Image (cartoon, rainbow, N blue to C red; front, top):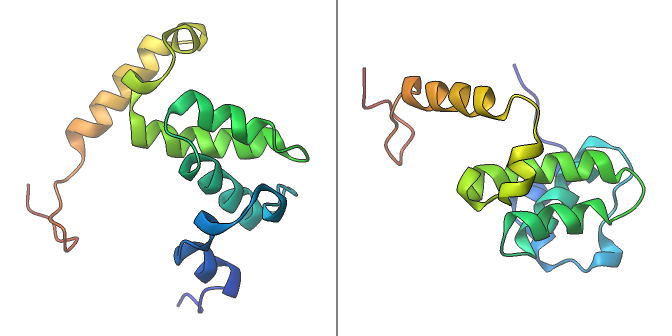
Amino acid sequence: MIGPFQPRVMIINAGEYKEKTRDQIRSSGYVIDTLEAALWAVWHTDNFKDAILLAANLADDADSVAATAGQIAGALYGVSGMPEEWVKKVAWSEHIQGLAQQLFERAPLHDPLGESIGD
């Protein structure tokens, strides 16, 4: 059985990071701080590149925050929203994109209520 969420997780889930200022965001390396900082960076930008750069410039554990922001922004904007020159520099980029496509094709479809509608 999974226990109740920590209060900080509930605050993140409620979207309070959206209203925070840069000075209120921590990137200490603590996983909750990392998630909140990454979500904050994506929320306060309007494209993949700016989200990553904002996250990477938060200081402290910026590499973890930027990596997490990259995952969130990547899901939001897709590969077409990423700077082409960045995509080209990723080792095995074509292979990774192929695997992502296979995962997408194999994923079960879900309706808005979370019930499986395919298969």
